[in-house]
Amino acid sequence: MSGESRRSFVTKLAAGSLAIAGRPAAPSNAPVHSLRRATAPPHRSPNDLIQFAVIGAGGMGVTDADAAISTKQAKLVAACDLYDGRLAKAQEKFGKDEPIVTTRDYREVLARDDVDAVIVATPDHWHRRIAIDALRAGKAVYVEKPVVHDLAEGPQLVAAQRETGRTLEVGSQGMSSLGNEQAKTLYEEGAIGVLNYAEGFWARNSPGGAWQYDIPEDASEETVDWDRFLGDTPRRPFDPIRFFRWRNYVDYGTGVSGDLFVHLFSSLHFIVGSLGPTRIMATGGLRFWKDGREVPDVVLGMFDYPETERHPPFNLSLRANFVDGTSGSTFLRLVGSEGAMDVTWTEVTLRKNKKHEPNRDPFASREEDEREARYGKRREMLPPAEAVYRAEEDYWGAHIDHFNNFFEGVRSGTPVVEDAAFGFRAAGPALVCNDCLARETIRRWDPVNMKLVG
Image 1 (cartoon, rainbow, N blue to C red):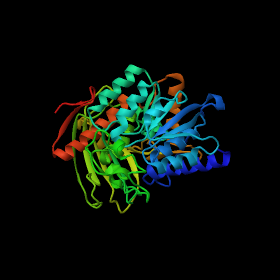
Image 2: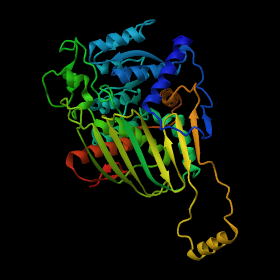
Image 3: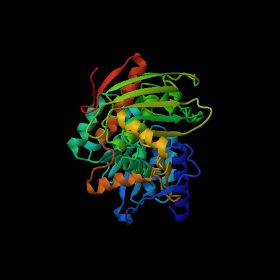
């Protein structure tokens, strides 16, 4: 990739991150602090590149591959997909200088000695099987979120990573962002006091945002490997809508919770050091996109977090709306006794409040009131009411940071920021949220042992 084209790509990727992680408006008079990555990964020679394959060469897989290549640490050598059109596009995009291997069968990729790592960007119902097969084949694995399609699959994948000792990172790219890291620092410094409440919001208002993906004109049983796509799900006649818009169907996708709540869980757990909630409830419905889909387009979830050594007890509310006529943004907000933070992958807005001491002695309060009436109130030293921490314009973005983190783990064996256990602790509550919706009930989750308990 030339210097100019790479700069163009990084600019577009950063802009995409802002669009995906759109931020609440910051006050114009708030002090702004720049965030930047202190060091860049070392430049690698062509002979020292990690060679990887992408399994699932759709929109997310191609975006992942672009981010991986832009780190200048890796080289794409193979692509696997079940639609011939995507394989042709992958060859055209990535094989101009040197042809890449293309196949419909992911097992052919795993059998290759020239593949060090794989990106698993398939529909959710294939994540667990391909990731475990790749680990056992000696490959490092970057698997898109949610890390599993079903709760029963989580312990299997966690065990496979532990037993093989291979690097596995889950693709909630915001985990490696400057925004998350700054929020974690501020939280641990006590910037918002005692945490008591958090909320996350994801808004969309477009067909693509609501998973009405384009269906190619040449989609047919000849160009699509329909039987392989179905895997262990119920047999059905060929249906291009199910294949290309798989997120809308429970056999293959995990709905709003699995696609979007997982990002918010991941960021929250990283910032406050949490293992997850213990009580989960949800509501929602299909309000607008009545196109045959099986999942809601509006979902609200509520979660009780227990007291731990890392954080006090607090409540979390998450919202997702695919019919939002006012915005296309997302943010995570942490509210404490002395302030609040609005967190995105590129920016943190900190709002402070005057500290009020709980359970203050009424007699002391009365004496202070009498002094104020006699002499006037003494002025106090107050911190800035609001401050903004914002990534610098040339920040390459959370997605590239996440792959830098992954490749460092591949090279050195050091722990990655989001391994299988961390990923499952984010995916588990999201999947339970779907269960609460389907059953119209409240469920209890064990965040330590990662299982349903009621």
